[in-house]
Each structure stands twice: as structure tokens, then as C-alpha cells.
Amino acid sequence: MTGIKLCGFQTVEDVRMATRLPIESIGFVMVPGRRRTVSLDHLPEMLSAVPAGIKKVAVLKDASLVDAVAWQTRYSFDVLQLHGTESPAYCETLKKMVGVSLCKVFDASARPVSEAGLSEYAPWIDCILLDSAQGGSGKSFNWTGIPQWQKAAKAYGLPVWVAGGLHPDNVGALIRRYGPDGVDVSSGIETDGRKDGLLINRFVERVMASGDEEERGGGTEGVLEIR
Ligand SMILES: O=C(O)c1ccccc1NCC(=O)[C@H](O)[C@H](O)COP(=O)(O)O
Image (cartoon, rainbow, N blue to C red; front, side):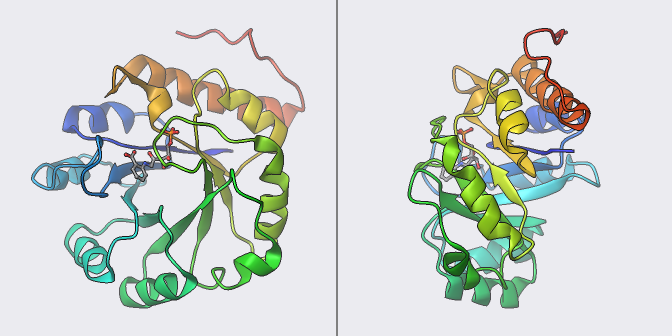
């Protein structure tokens, strides 16, 4: 089954709405000064609203190790998603300091990384996320490079998740063509910059239906009834 991460949550109501659905994880943007940057005043309440079994993900981008460790110590995230130019040495230090799962984001619009390119990251990270150059931008990338990333990641047993411009109407095609371990979305479940319950439901429904189709080896795009 394809894992689902919904990202960029800023209100307790939206967290409650989204976490009723069968998702694997929910993301909070800890990058300062962004439109979706979470309020640290509201974060504890939002984190408490996440049911056990759904992972709480902090989205970081070139955070100082001091900040990353302080946030992890204070908020006990399940995963730290590293969206910047964090080096293998940074991942190693962070992993050794906090021991939490690390998901390293790679710009999939650039050349696919080789097995050798991943080798220095592999001991310290738990997942790779392919995204477009700007996280949370709603922009897609050329998916044809995905298999090369999957091949490189497989050598280290690393799951490959995909983000970047996903929405209810393209996620099924992505899953059927490339079978990623998980999908991550933010812009595609928003209307006018706010999380939209209908789009969230539709996205999750499409992922689940596509997983079923993948297992059956078929495709039903266009005939799935959306409630
Ligand atoms: O959402 C942000 O503002 C953000 C800022 C800086 C780094 C990452 C950010 N978001 C990450 C995500 O929301 C997801 O991991 C992913 O990039 C979703 O992208 P999209 O569905 O294309 O909005």
C-alpha cells in the first residue's frame, strides 16, 4: 500500500480532519518565514491532536543543528524531513544526536543520483523524498527520472516517496506508473491557500484506489466515484 503524507498543517481543526483518514504521516513546516510556517504557540496542541499511529513530521530546511536538536527535544517528532542542502555529515550528526528517523529530500528536477551519490547518506537516513526544486511550491517534476532514483535507493533498502505538484487528479497515474513507497502533498489539497477537506478526502481516496488497481494490475482512472 502506498503511504500518504499530508503536509503544511497550521490549525488543530485541519489536523483533526486529516488524521481521521488512513494516512501514514502529517507534516508541519518549521522553516521560518514561509506561508505555511507553523506557529510554535499552536504546535503543541496540533501535535496532541495527532492520533497514535500517525507519524508527526517536522519539515526543516538547512536548520542549524542547535535548532533541529532543540525542536526535536521539545516536540518529539517521529520524522525530521530535511528539505535543504543538508550534507551527509549533517545527517550523521543529527542522527547520532537525536536518533529519530530522517527523510532526506532530493531535488528530482536535477540529474538522478547514482548509487554512489547516495552511499554517504544511506547509513544516516531512513527514507528519500523526491520533490521539485522548491518544496511546497505545487510544482511537479519530470517523473521519468523516478526509476533511476528507485534503483539507487533500492541498493540501500531506502524507501522512495514522491512529492511535487501532486493532486487528486494526477496521483493515481504516478502510483500506477512508478509505484512509489509513499506520496506527499501540500498545495494539491488546498484551495485559496487553505487546506480543503474535500480535496484531502479525494486525494486519499485516489491513492487508496490506485493501490488496489496496482495490486490487481489494472486501471480505473475516470470511473472512480468521488463522494
Ligand atoms: O510548504 C512549505 O512552505 C515548505 C517550505 C520549505 C520547504 C518545504 C516546504 N514544504 C514541504 C511540503 O509541503 C511537502 O514535503 C512537499 O514539498 C509538498 O509539495 P507540494 O505538494 O508541491 O506543495
